[in-house]
Each structure stands twice: as C-alpha cells, then as structure tokens.
Image 1 (cartoon, rainbow, N blue to C red):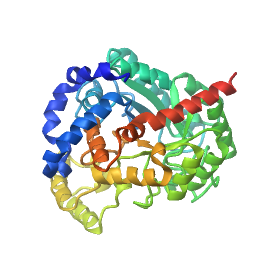
Image 2: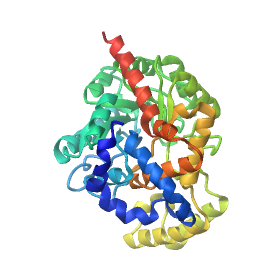
Image 3: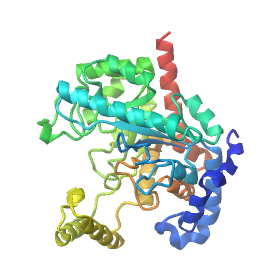
Image 4: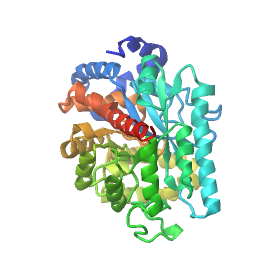
Length: 427
C-alpha cells in the first residue's frame, strides 16, 4: 500500500505522545476490557497505517492561530487538534475552518465577516508555509492529500464556515477558491443572505423561516460552487435549505459536522429522510463529536449542573466571565459530576456512525470532530485518541476496508467528483 513507508514516522513524530497515552488508549470506557482491546488496537494501528485518515471539520481560534501564542506544532494543551496529536493518533489530514460569526446583514457586517475569514485563511496558510512547512502542507485537491501524506506530513485543507462571509458579491466564491478553499458551510447560527439556518438567531431578529430554504442569491452560490468544484456543506442548514441544496446542486454535498436526529433530536442533526436524500445525492455525513449533539443530558444531569453553577457562583453558559478560582472549582466539580451522570462518550459517537451507515449506507459516512469548536468526548477528546474510534468500529464488526472509507475514503470520493465536475464545466 502507498503508506507502508510511513509507519516508522509515528515513532519519530508522535511516539512520545503515543507512549504517554498508551495506558489509556481506549479511554475510561474501555479500561475494564484492556486485555481484549490489545488485539483490536494492533489491528487499528494497521488500518491507520494503510488508510488515508481525514477529519472534515476543526475550528481555529483566529488570527493568533499558528503564532508563538498558539502553536499547533507542539502538544498544545489549548488545542485538541495539533500536529503532534494528529501524528500520535494516525490522522493524516484536517479541514481547518475559517469561521465568521453571524451578525447584521449590512455592508459593515459583511466587511467584518470577510475580514475575519481572510485572517483565518492567512493563519492556516501561515501554519503550512512559515511555521511548520517541514511537517505539514496545504492541500487543495485529493491528489495533493495523497502526495503529502505519503511523505509523512499532515495535509491541511481550508473550509469556510458561514457563507455570510461572501457578502452579496458572487465573485467572492472564486476569490476564496483561489485561496485554496475546498468547501463552504452555507450558514451558521442564524439566517443569512444565502439560506435559512437550523438555528434562527432571535437576537438578530430572525423569524423561524425567512427564505424557506435557499435565497435567490443562495441558488447562484450553489451553482457557482458547482462550477468551481467547491464542496457544498449543509451542516447548520435548515431542513428546507437542505432540501433545496440537494435539489439544486449538480454534485454530491457534504454535512461536515452533524449527527443523527433519530438518536438525539437536535436541530443540528439530520433526520433519516435527510440521510436517505444524502445517499441518493451521493454525498456524505461527517459525524460530529459534540456531546450535546450526540446525546441529550438527562434531567438529573441538567439539574446537577445548574445546582453546581449556583453553588460556585457562576453562570454555566458564561464561564469565561467567572474568576479563575471559580472556573477551576467548577471544572473540578464537573469532573466528579461527569462520573455520576456520564455525558456522551465514544460509544455514543460510534452509535451515530452506526445509524448513519444503516440508513444512508457505509459509503456515505465520515468523521468531522468539530475539535476546538466544541467537539470532544470521553474516548475521543483529541486527535491523539483517534485510534479509539477505529477500535470501537472493529469491535462492532466493521471491516478494515469500511473503516478506511469512514475515516476518509468516502469524503475523498465526494471531493474528487465535485472537483472533476467543476474542471469539466470550466473547459
């Protein structure tokens, strides 16, 4: 296989981190099964050594990313995704999201959103060209991902999260494409000029529905993304938007970080009907590792968290405003609370993979962690834990070939088709 030359690099680049975590490689959930996990772990290592493993959605902090203040080149305690953790977990590539928060739809709002995305794109490119070019490279095509990974480097791709950053100028789609953007998430939390979101922003005056799917401008954006070979991302989109995109797009679409609503009725998750539509479209759902999307907290857990916040004197949804002493105490007590009322963990995450595979087919499922943007669960709390996912899939009877598809093969297939169609349209 094309990656057999790379296995020795694990010890060189990520071995120290791997050794530090080896006693806990399958997380607390699997501690009682340590004896039976070792053969699965060995097989998981073999799968990762031969597969091309990708994560379709990781957030970055902003302009300070890829500087001495926030270096992804070390085992950084501030990050769930960095080059060291990727190497330790056998993750070959990530799509880093250049994010713009939803604000007012006016000239000033569009300008600030565009600037925010440009700053993040510059930070991503800085990682690959200035800070750590010896360990990672920017990839803009699937073939480049293959080439970069074969050299033992990490492949870094760019996505834009929130089409709000396009403003009302359709030519911005091409400008972002020229900067290496491989997908655009059409919206975020709040309706925008492109489409309706699954989470209307009341603070911005959003009605339950505004465009009832794609706006006229949004239909132009979809067509332009098809023409340029940019993947269309329907995570965060309203069901009406999802329907319109699947109908309007001439190419497969992705949901870069979503879950299954049959397992947890959350606005960010896809229904079985949407999963079937995604299968018919040829697209892929990338399962997200955000606790609240995977499993709703029990009433007992909710009450316990509220009681804890009150006793500590903090607002649980605004912990950043608390003192450091309050934050530390809250986190310490939360660790105890988690043991009494467990939140979503690795098994819940793989339950969503299972469900999507059953409904849409295993060829239409992938992984989009949302690390550093809210993602992270027991057993899969960073890319250093990536092998745990494969161990759990093996335990459930998935073959090495199927795991290879889930970890990147399916996404690469969609990406290749989208880019090939775009190239054909531009001739």
